[in-house]
Length: 79
Image (cartoon, rainbow, N blue to C red; front, top):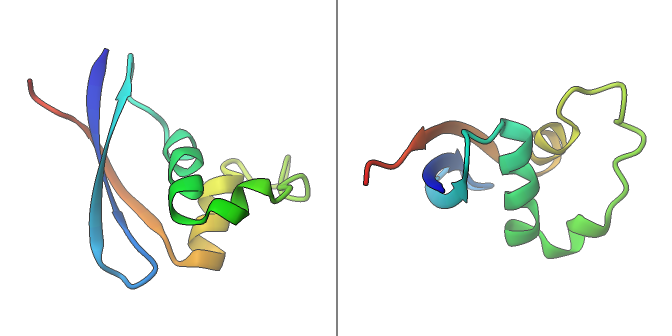
């Protein structure tokens, strides 16, 4: 399993970093689904059905539009 470094801007505009394990490079939506419960535990219970089909990446959109969290990059960690 490979490790991936995810850089993102938190709600205060401060760049943060998170490391995650995945066989292949995760998509922004996969990263957003990982970040949301860590940053906003109560938000994980929200239903995003109204965005399904209307948005390609509903979790990414929700984090950015409502919480000002933006994923900057996803890069493989050299080991």
